[in-house]
Length: 204
Picture 1 (cartoon, one colour):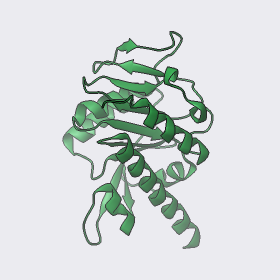
Picture 2 (spheres, helix red, strand yellow):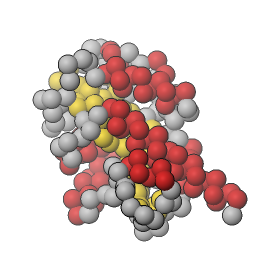
Picture 3 (cartoon, rainbow, N blue to C red):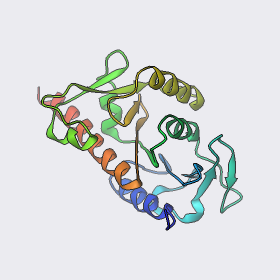
Picture 4 (cartoon, rainbow, N blue to C red):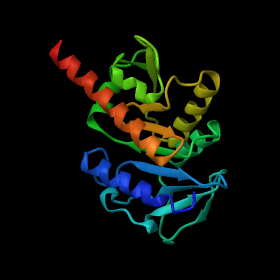
């Protein structure tokens, strides 16, 4: 990337904040660089007003290698981003938000997976099948985030996910893509599907 990729992350964060997906300081967004390090939003930053200084640069091994503000701390969920980047070498952006619909929909899951509706919109997640049977993996919200990251690694190594997304129960959704734009599109589509599931439960 020739320009600073943080600008795309900042723009996405403002949109997600306005949609109510990143209220307060919730959520975390990251973008990977050509040397495999990645910028991730620093802990405790208000996502509707991010600046370039509100990031921390992380080595692939998880150590901090750069921080525009010496008081910045990496997001508490850095280990999940690190795991996604390690598992999927082509991924260049990883976005995690906290929406009401994602948290409600996670409670519709069975045996660690949430079946998604076979809507036309699912094509936006790379599923080009007629009447697809697609499910998103759901993980428990352990207090120690590294425990979540370990479960993600173990499950995905055993069985890669149908789509580039996962849910953490009572927490939120994480998506990943080949660029910040792709990750943003995936997140919007995933949230649309969660909203559909919630509404469908209300009218049936």
